[in-house]
Length: 135
Image (cartoon, rainbow, N blue to C red):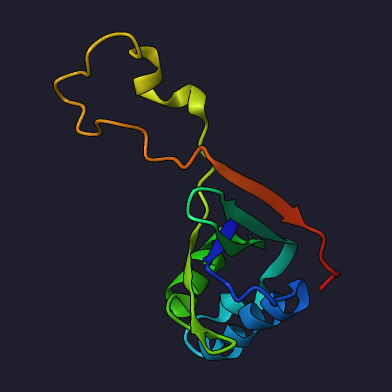
């Protein structure tokens, strides 16, 4: 399962993010013994450049197995401090534009049950996967 860490400090490295996740191992291990047996897979850092607002965001994406442990880590790490900055941690959900119901009815009026009047995705972002050191 993939773990998404939103708004990490820009100078964060792959090694420091892995250390941040591993730091919760001892705190959770007393109550949930299965947490001590998780493995960190790939760790990526995304750089999102918003051309309209001229801002840059950094996010972490980490693969963790087993899934049960990943959900326990979300509860523990959400709102924790990384270099003095509070970060939001949540499971990452891969979405496809092919499954978007609104795409099928683009030329028609919106369905009465459809509450979303427009696409909220930011299509004007420049997304770059940063090359990182191994953890």
